[in-house]
Image (tube, rainbow, N blue to C red; front, side, top):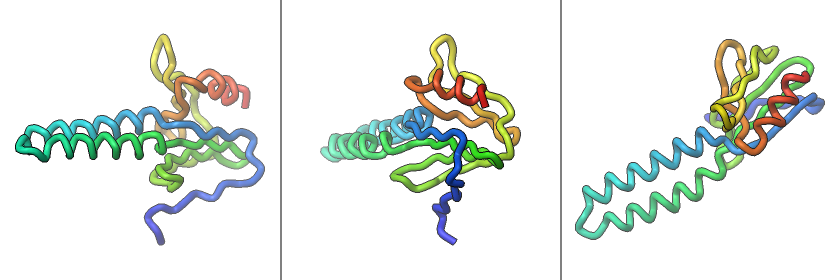
Length: 137
């Protein structure tokens, strides 16, 4: 069985949203850039700037491709996180426990509770639309 095993999605979704994953994007950018800055100090004799440039290019390639998807069907709710279209994490439950905003006073996304686990989805641009749609279900 492959490591990146996509969760099958039913064709009759009552609600579906695919959006950037700002939490994963920020974390990935910090990891790439902190690694590069550390490398600059270690490799001050000429390799540091190249490492910094490589880390910045890698962050620019990977971060925009970190996305999350929420699909609500009649039987279950599926949240999956992808990079380059490949699922690296997914969770599913029979129903959504609770829906709340993340961050105040300006929400940076929505937190959905699935089977006792809080999952951050959405972004600052679509937080209100996702929150209203999920509360209407």
